[in-house]
Length: 77
Image (cartoon, rainbow, N blue to C red; front, side, top):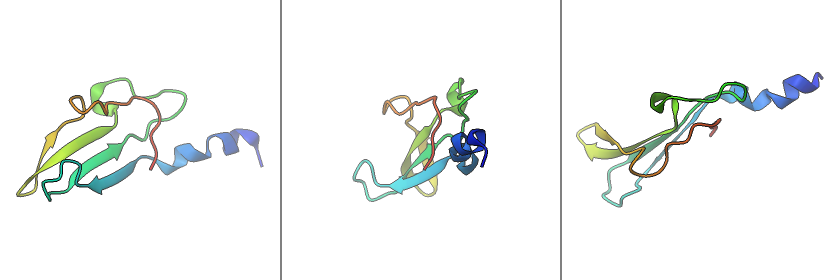
């Protein structure tokens, strides 16, 4: 198999999602790993990994920057 294909295999999986209660309020919070690639990683805030606090009634607050989770490289999960 081509070595280039093996090196880029993880790029085919895209980003990932984690749903958990980060702040202990019994409302699910959401972390979204970006699906950037190795050659051109995410560069703008809307392309970084994202983290949202659940606020109830299907509403969420973007807490990416305040939580220190703004990550611009390749994410996978």
